[in-house]
Amino acid sequence: MKKITVLLMIMAFGLSFAAQPAFAGSKQRYRWQGVAIGVGAAILGHAILNSCNENPSCRKAPVYTHPCPPSHRYGYWEIRSVWVEPKYKRVWNPGHYNRRGLWVPGQWQMIEKEPGYWQEQEVWVARR
Image (cartoon, rainbow, N blue to C red):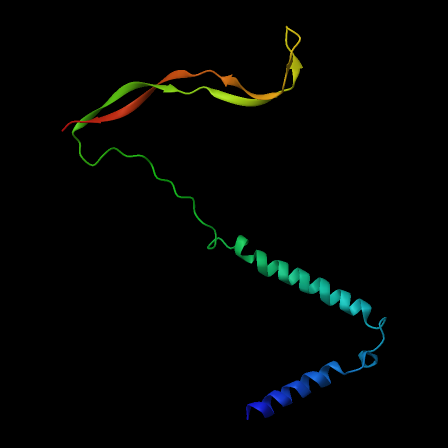
């Protein structure tokens, strides 16, 4: 049974590939209809793909979680000074001759963009 099925499938594929291209018609015929169908399919496909972006139910709502004090009420707010690290920028220093006339190869250097500073911050201090 399997042999007959496989043989029939091979014959069906063989006949489909044996068809002459002359039966397809002229190359110039119906060109503008094909262009119109292609443009219409592209517009329709674009609308289908982007339909989820326009639908408000598909958009993800931003999640905002506000900081809240601990569940226990025993404690107090305290102002503490916190050191904020300075910000640096990485720049390339090209090769050059130093004051002694020796060649110094180029290298990356860190240049300070903003200096560090102390900032006061409120911190919840819990009593036990």
